Image 1 (cartoon, rainbow, N blue to C red):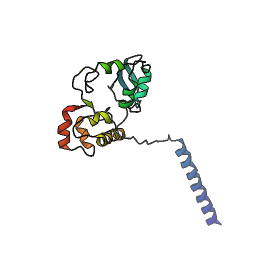
Image 2 (cartoon, rainbow, N blue to C red):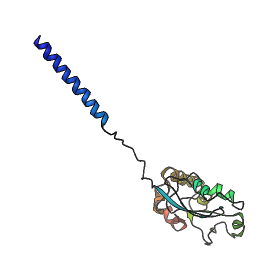
Image 3 (cartoon, rainbow, N blue to C red):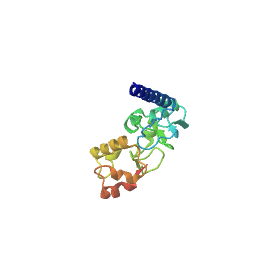
Image 4 (cartoon, helix red, strand yellow):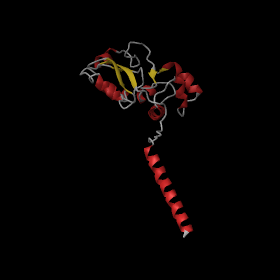
Length: 188
């Protein structure tokens, strides 16, 4: 009988200890671990929207905002905006970068441009912006056709904006020789 009492007592002690540990665990704050994809996002980004929008200016948006959100903040495109150009050259789903400038050209600007390569801001020899260029712009560079141009766009969409022009060499098909041919014709 004494052994049974000892075993029952021991069992009650173990049950009590288990309940107590559960109670203490429930009282502890929950610890969460969140995985961060790639580079940490900024809390906010500051971008400039210029050209044919209703409210050109500098805007503060939440980190991770898209180009279409910046255009909406700027009141949207005016009737004079070259919507065909915007459709071909601006990926409105692209995540904004801090300090980015978005320029929306007008249809009139296009008619004033003598050469298709002339940039909207008035520079005679336009550089291809590796973060915004469409297939048509890439196709104009030596050694880059539509297929490689699309590969560059796909790389940019998968990995985010280029931070340095040298990063373009990470795209399959762009080696040192091709980079040397285009490095003076590209920009961020």
